[in-house]
Amino acid sequence: MSFDNLGLSASLLRAIADQGYTTPSPIQAKAIPLILEGRDVMAAAQTGTGKTAAFTLPLLHRLTDGRAVRPNRCRALVLTPTRELAAQVQGSVRDYGKYDGLTSAVVFGGVKINPQIALMRRGIDVLVATPGRLLDLHGQGFIDFSDVEVLVFDEADRMLDMGFIHDIRRIVKLLPVKRQTLMFSATFSAEITQLAQGYMQNPVKVEVSTPNATADTVTQWVYPVDKKRKPELLSHLVRDNAWNQVLVFTRTKHGANKLSQLLEKDGIRAVAIHGNKSQNARTKALGDFKSGKIQALVATDIAARGLDIEQLPQVVNFDLPNVAEDYVHRIGRTGRAGAAGIAYSLVSADEADYLYGIEKLIRKSLPREEIDGFEPEHAVPQGRPAQQTRPPARRGGAGAPRGQQPARRRRGGNGGRGNVSGSRAPR
Image (cartoon, rainbow, N blue to C red; front, side):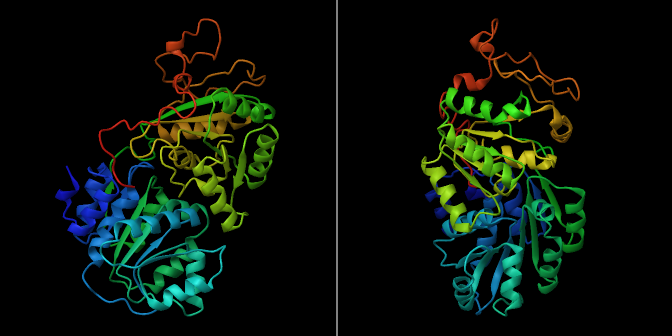
């Protein structure tokens, strides 16, 4: 199938071609026709499979009817949980809508509100927003929701995890009852399904993979290690594998700051990104990471949604998340758009329950490998028998032929970046 078969306008097809995309991903192929029909849609797909374009493209198609936008109003509203994701979505709207003359804007906290007020005074076709700043603007009288035709929840489960449910309820009450509502996420919990029942009209559920599954393009490994030796092991992996770009996840903001400082002292260019950082600092950190000025970006789960780093070669879970679904989103930062990636988890004995919860969620046991010189004194209990065809070879150990070692042994610095499919689908 090509995009020509989906019913999109010629201007959108031109914009898609400009981005170098030819074939829709499975979620795009299934969701776009339903959205064009005007149906409410709940779509679940793995991170990195093109969910943003799956709702952006038909949304823009719907808005190209020549209807004028009134001051302080918008015709489509996209809600996201984080600033980074909001900026990413608005970038997609801008890129795909460039030939249609549609206007878009992004509003979120952490930056001055006056420029956002100025944007809203003119009226906007597509407004992408985080809930808190959106309600601030409405409370001050700068946004009127009466013209909203389409509401999109992007990563709705994360919004619930971050405590936005009350804000979401307040926003939905302000919107027209007659509208199209879309929910897109990598995971759908029981709470999300309940939310959908209250806000959607006979929604069509679209799934292109097993719920909460991880992408086949991501190879996953667990490295058992004592907690106190995790920083040393991470430095060892970065240097020994000549990693020039690695995204590292910690559980807390303090942990992210501390780890980035330890890496810097060890000669590894690193910076932390989390909710306590100013938006300017977060934007600069991400820009430096993408440009190669920074080797290691150390992040909390705020970065698990919205960081779209093309062909990011590897992700490391320095700490396992205490919410199993966050693991899916973390490792979804690599292996995107058909490219290959590897996710490593440094797991200490006190995280055994978290590991078991993750394996239960994704319905498979993760292969383990002990790194020579870092064997743990406190073993990580095996939650259930590992479903492996062979035991993982201990790195550098006797009797570990090169062909039987993990893929990372053959990757080099930023290896494994190649696209594993013949074409790419837009994100």
